[in-house]
Amino acid sequence: MADVPEAIAIRELLERLTPRQRAVCLLLAEGRSQVDAAQRLGITPQSVQYHLKRIRNVLSDMGFDIAALRPKHTKASRRRRRGRA
Image 1 (cartoon, helix red, strand yellow):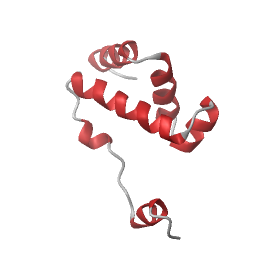
Image 2 (tube, rainbow, N blue to C red; image 1 turned 90 degrees about the vertical axis):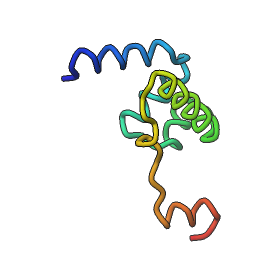
Image 3 (cartoon, rainbow, N blue to C red; image 1 turned 60 degrees about the horizontal axis):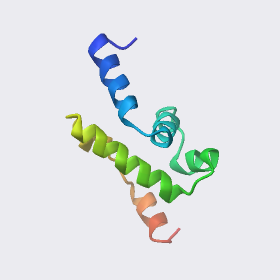
Image 4 (cartoon, rainbow, N blue to C red; image 1 turned 180 degrees about the vertical axis):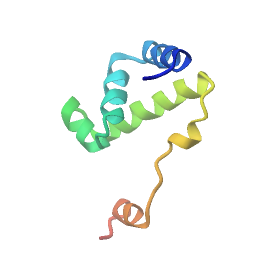
């Protein structure tokens, strides 16, 4: 169970997010992919990325170190983004 300061920080974060940002945040926290979250919310993966960027901005404004939240890209994921198999 989360300790009290952590629970307060989580509650404050959720209060600062829009309803759509909260939905994206909660789906990603469940371990869903960005594509899956987009499908479940009926939006594009690019919209999920936009909301995730805004969530990171809120976290940064709250004083969290967001560098640890950036996804680590593997060689395979970089090739997929470039359109190579």
